[in-house]
Image (cartoon, rainbow, N blue to C red; front, top):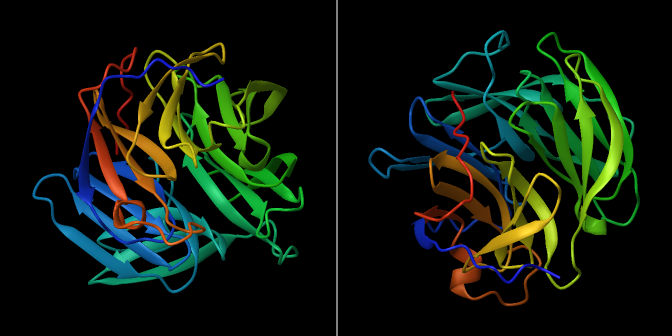
Length: 303
């Protein structure tokens, strides 16, 4: 059963962006910007924490996740902002210039699987880009988990997923967490220096009354924070996989979360699939959680 320990928090709406499926949230700490996308109505959003400025950019095709390129990556495009992405083109560079977004394909390991699409992805502590695919109909276990390195080489790490989500990483970079949302399972793998995984194990089986595990992040003490689709909460798991608390959120479908400063999480949400969603469910897309007791030190990304 989900823990009944409510983590004290204050939730503030940053931007009612009216996205159908808000996802792909990343924090660009050097510019104090949050980037995220709408998968269903392809758009890119940028929110400035400096002055609350909001920018929306149409996307030429579906994008499902974003990442900030680490040092050592050589972008094939130039722009005011250059990001890594996954989506309809597979792995791709994404460049923002004068209000226009262009995509440059890197590689698509599932070009032969038209019923699949990429879903979620994240840069690991080792500088590689980890991302998973899913069956668009969410019925077949045709999804897989991949890694892309700075040289454009991909490897398939695992198979047999209906809906991939995550990943997230332990503070020491030696464990990677990954979800099959449809099965309500969070898995853990050992991660070595080459980007290979081993020792797959069930880390946590989520209760059917608590929603579905979606995007997630970790803090500096190894606690895992999981956005629970249909659960109206962000759930906290300890490094052993036990539920140690939850943050209630005023949206039905939180989708992913990221630390933006110690004690502060930002998260996105979705309206897709809801019957006649209320304005709060439909429009509250980007929120931040302030001053909550995380039970650990936040890990704020450096980029």
